Image 1 (cartoon, rainbow, N blue to C red):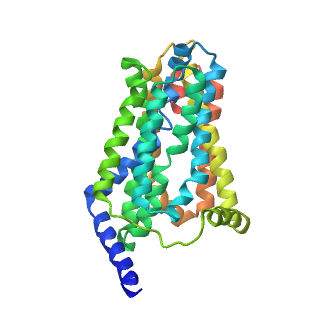
Image 2: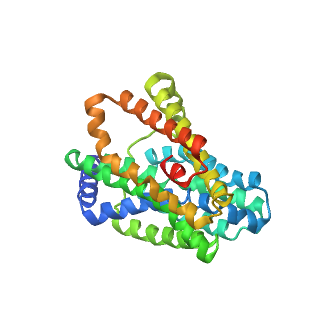
Image 3: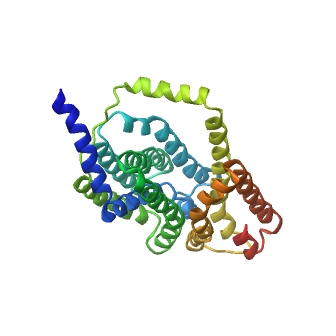
Length: 319
């Protein structure tokens, strides 16, 4: 029994020292970013997908919706497993499952297959949400902020670049190509993660059912959590409503642009990436509630600009 107790701190110490290496943190940041990127590849490609299957705008518009629903379901039912099972193994398995989902999406012969594979793709795209808590728990307090900031930067940059990459690749090689490329990257990352991270067993003895029940307890007992969840759900819905419809707006008069230009709009979001490092300081100075209200007001102003002057490209970019 004593040997078991002694081994736990040793394992945590070894893990912490490995996570202190820049190359390992960089690898984890790339993994977080590319796993999240899988959710957004389809958005600039919707018009191309619609033409490929000869389906309506309404039908193809359900593809990103199903991907996001799968993502939400994965967050709810898969992420809690990180508190119960061995983490490195779980991350590696999820990367391999992601690769399979990406291949299934690329091979889709019809809209039904694509719909199911898109849901499964979103469901398995929760790797970043397994890595970040794992790293937060295993990193020394003095290094934690810097390391988590690096991982979050990977996520933010991926959201910006995913659409640009898929739009460019889709314009040159067809919409399926980005999924084949992403599948190969997931397999490479799975082997890299397995080689760099040590085994990290959870000490939590709760059953899966108890873990899920604890989520309900948190929601009931934490009013701030409920408020934050509602806020992020609504802003995320608005965010995706814009991106899902953008490609069809750009294809219509007076623009007549294709998937490549729709993807390049991802670079407009660089403003958000630049602002991210300053948000923490402003929260310390003004408080989180003030910053959330300010951010929501800015988002609302963006939609107002697009609504009023969306026929002008500069207004669309600004909005």
